[in-house]
Length: 290
Image (cartoon, rainbow, N blue to C red; front, side, top):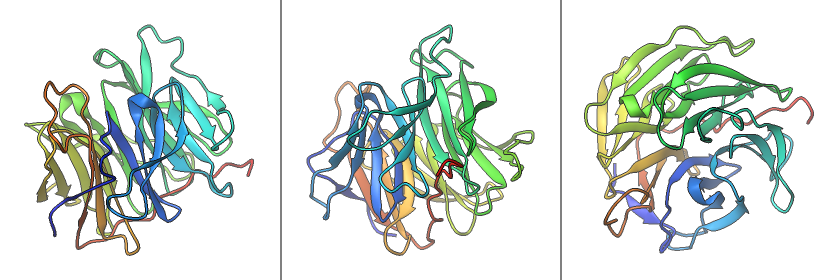
């Protein structure tokens, strides 16, 4: 494994998350500025804005059969984004919540559903939820009582889901019914004592990679929960990870500057490193309307 190399100089993200290798390119979000970004053609090329919203943008996934269109966790709901057009809202489920909420991280599963979490701006304990968007566009609360949900991440066949509750330093593992997306009882997969588990991805061996916010690390856990790899990141707040590139063996990491009294020169940068085990293809949301 090589050292991490920063990308997109001189870009530094306020809250870089939701990083994906999709449609042959790298995309990520800067949540608080509402931007969907893509990497340039070389390491020093600035990141390019694909979409900019006037509301926080938590994460996206590609929409199958609609090139250039993304399903997004944005603001207080779920929408479809196509550059140059207004968002097409599917749901605004957290708009009337008792505390001010926003959507956070999310991804599609191998069966074509889109999953995304919500959280309170002020970190109110247990205010967050995990929502599932089915192919027919129906948005359902799948879990509640989460403070800061991050991920989720799915295994190859979409029957296992990992989800962080970052505020508790906890990653849980759930069984997933492939027929309807129903979740089994969650079990503790791992607990982090220093820092918080944040964005996640699963590789071809079923191991879980997770960014560790506040600890300047990315960690790889084997399917039995054994910690196999610790990769030091030259930024305090790693927030998102994905595996991609032409052979799937490039690990990409987003970081954040938000909340740091004196950000360092690489806080908020996007990084890459070569790894031995490739990742899984990025799943797309498969709308029945497509």
